[in-house]
Image (cartoon, rainbow over all chains, first blue to last red):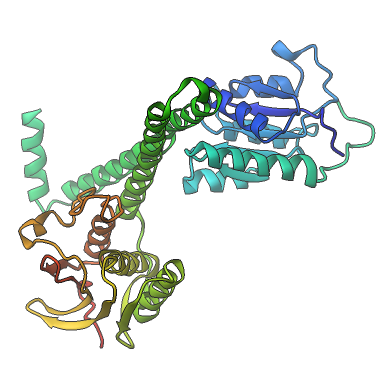
Length: 153
Length: 258
């Protein structure tokens, strides 16, 4: 089930790419709140409500995770691996959103359980269209996995 | 530095020394890995600034249209097209370097079918063009099917492109006897080029025509040459300005079978 207030987690270290992605969401009329994590550690801190995000309610999970691969501290594939390894997050939709179309990245990304792999186009008009389609698919069309009964913490 | 080079040269000459051979192989593998990681960095890191140039260029055009006059908006257009073009060049450079390092998977390849598919694709993309095409039956070769398809696609694309200013054009794909023995060829009756510059034909990003006349990045023939060389073959061309061009290629020990 989707509501317009379900959160999107954007994992992106480049501030200009962040601003462009937020702009692309706005242009695509996707108004969901977007949480930005600037490195892999921060992304996991948000998901597991620890560190700087210790105060948040860990039972509320993002509707969609947009994951860049090249990140400081812990790269995107490592973040994905940890997301898939934890009962609380293993079924969350993760879309890799990156510059790379290297075979090795795509193979490892899918191998680690990415739901989708999208290359960021240089042409911003195409980027907006990619974001619009991602939003439509993952926030509206797609039905995500039901929450586990007994809500494991 | 100089000392190191001298040592390196002597070692590579000593072909009977297995140790030297093993060392050369290790160095080649290391160089290949370095090239691959460089390409990886290029594909990641060079695209991000381009995305910013294009994206914020568009943002400026959208949000500040009222404070820009026509000339200002035109300049912004140039900035964006240039960023997009550079992205294309990066992609092509990357695929060129990938071709140099890709492992070959040799199999018998039906070159007639590959050429006909390329023509069909071009006809669908440019239905208004009138091009008479003849492709010899039964052209086959042993090689990497994906890479050989890139060769024929690029040569047929080229022939199609450089006959673009002809009301009626003719493209021919086949085999012929040359001074170098039998070779495949792709011939067109298009713009051709001055043979004085033939030496530059296969250099990456070399272009013979202004982009206003013929689009392109100048990577196609460089790619063709790399692939043909990796198959132990040779590629060359014969042309005359405004009288068309013929590209010939061999594939090493694989003689064309007409």
